Length: 320
Image (cartoon, rainbow, N blue to C red; front, side, top):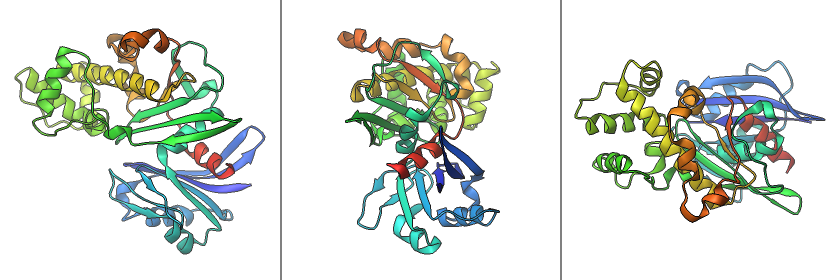
């Protein structure tokens, strides 16, 4: 059985045909496109469909970065960081799909977790998973996605949320000072204001103000690059602060969801700066939860490798 699967983020759209196999799913006709090239999702989908040299499947699952509003006709989503609106009913009509589902992108990523092998992630905290326990995934990229997966009666159930818009927590005097600086521009400061690509720039500007230095006109890749190569010490500080905030947020997610099956960190940023983890307090912040720290020490922690896991989760959604 084949199906169309798509993962639409704030920057890139990923399309593929998923074919069921004995081991899971095989992705064919895989293509990644820049969302800014298109006026809307339907135009991006049409562009990909026109490139296919095989029959178009009649089933599709679209995973999009934004809260999905359930409707009698199948749901709609407004993509928070892109400005696209996607409507399941309109897509079914325009592209003549027999069946189409619209889900959150991190719900799809959560759906993929039971399908992953050890080749799909790096182990950050190597402790045994508790069987049939909840799992969680969060990922800073264009925004910050958060979702969970819980087992009940032998089946997995996705818990999709918008944790990127929960309020940012602080764990040190320095972070409190940074938060106070950022609150002059936005109040409250939510997780995504720091833990995202643009969040890197917001955090960098706050670090500059903390040091009394005017910020450079950096983009997120500039902050990452100058921090990694050491050419700008304040960018380096920014990346360390970013990892510390991320460790705290990952620990909070583990607590909210009881994720003793593991917390997985995805998104496009961590793989680029993972070499700085030993310089940061990432794991300490993950574990530092007061009286429940012994419980936190039982939670495995993983970093997802760059790949197309959300497409696999979208395919699994159609089988559910």
